[in-house]
Amino acid sequence: MRPEAPTDRQTVYALLTEHTKGENLIRHCLAVEAALRAYARKYGEDEALWGAVGLIHDFDYEKHPSLEEHPMVGCGILRNLGWPETAIRAILSHSDQSGVARVSRLEKALYAVDELTGFITAVALVRPSRSLDDLSAKSVRKKMKTKAFAAAVDREQLLAGAAVLGEDFDAHVDFVIRAMRPIGSELGFESQA
Image (cartoon, helix red, strand yellow):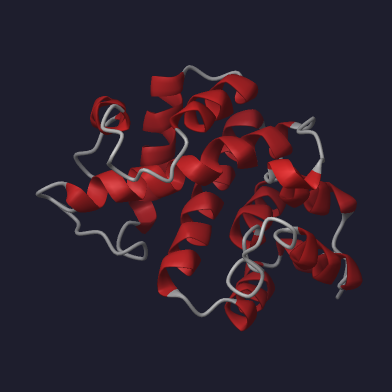
């Protein structure tokens, strides 16, 4: 892989879909990509690199879902393809099991948006509108209080992600929702527009 390939979205998307067939996992990666691109713009960082990391961060999960394998197997593949260590470290750091501390802003942002995009998706899908257009942090917070709703999502991790990034939680949630809206139809949502 050429050194510039990780920022070539077409190449990254092809790698994602080569390893991932499940529509929901692909949609999750698209949501994380959108959120990371938005944060890269906000912080003045490399939007293409951040987007590539978001798009590819879970590409090995379908074939290697165990805590012992994900994301380590995927990062081995990326390393063999010549991906930069900046991207590999960020992907490793989104898993507590990897032992890679979240130090860079990219690492912190990936951790902050990963589980949150999934929770936002779950909240939007149970709303009457089935849309991101009328979703806000207030609705997300309300669903966080219902332990049975999306029970596998660790609410403390959602809060910790915003804190690690240095963002107010409600502002962070609203920011991620806004980042996901332009690709709402790709994520399977109805549009109110």
